[in-house]
Image 1: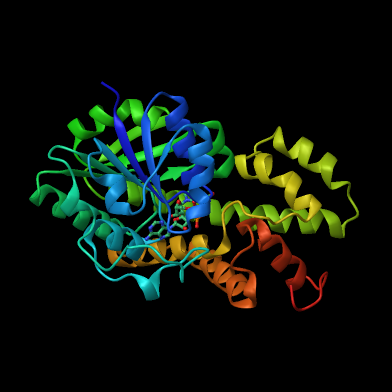
Image 2: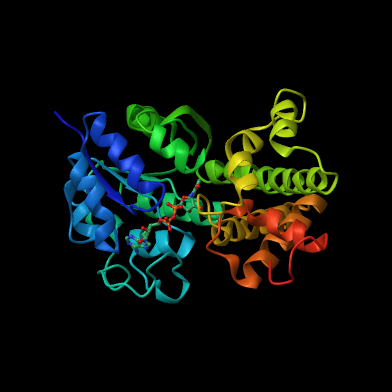
Length: 317
Ligand code: NAD
């Protein structure tokens, strides 16, 4: 029997992830608050739902890929989300947030996989709320960006019940190549927070190196080529270096979302007394980029800020 998957949140990441599930042979019913984003899924062979609850009702597995903790809570638990919702269409219509959420409408035994990046404590709470109704809720945030989502090669870090993980593994493998169960509920989000801490720090030093090379009149394409083959080589330089050199900061991963993630990182570090001096600085730099009105650019726009701080760009970044 074909597995039916309700997919809620078809943005930069969710859209291609849902399309990959269709290609892998799953029956996918999609819902997005701005309806136009469901079109690519329908073109790929998926079905359209008129609401989150409709996408979830009758599904064996429900996947959420939404911007932030309040969005996921609103969709799954049903409380009001309006003022905290981020994304392209916070003022859009839809039925989310004003009625019982998806959890209350799940089939018995259905599993929820939240693949958004949210707070670990919220992930734990959602797992408990699901368990009270007899449904398992896994946290399964991803890394690999839009390219990884399109190519189906994401890294997926999963927290929650191990049996539930085993049962949805084929679904996760249709979207990612590195799929690892990292521990109980919330652990996936903790690992993702560590990922975002590392990405912010690396992006900042890559940006600094590119401005440094430019200031010294070095051919940056050649420099990046040789740096990529040495110890300083890294996935960010490899995947984002060319666009950064072209000054192309179309997202990608929006500054707004990385700001949200660094809030999760700094709060979680503080909770456990872990010192993250470089991470805290990176969080401030990302917050400043956002405060200057660049929340919708790719996070590699940190390069613009280094140029500004170095007097190599006008003050308005
Ligand atoms: P996005 O803003 O492009 O997509 C989110 C989608 O959810 C939008 O299409 C929006 O319309 C929809 N949405 C918002 N609230 C909704 C609701 N209540 N009901 C239905 N649809 C709703 O964001 P994205 O880049 O796809 O990121 C999604 C999540 O994945 C975020 O948590 C982000 O941090 C994480 N993430 C993103 C990337 C990336 O490179 N973009 C990489 C890894 C992880």
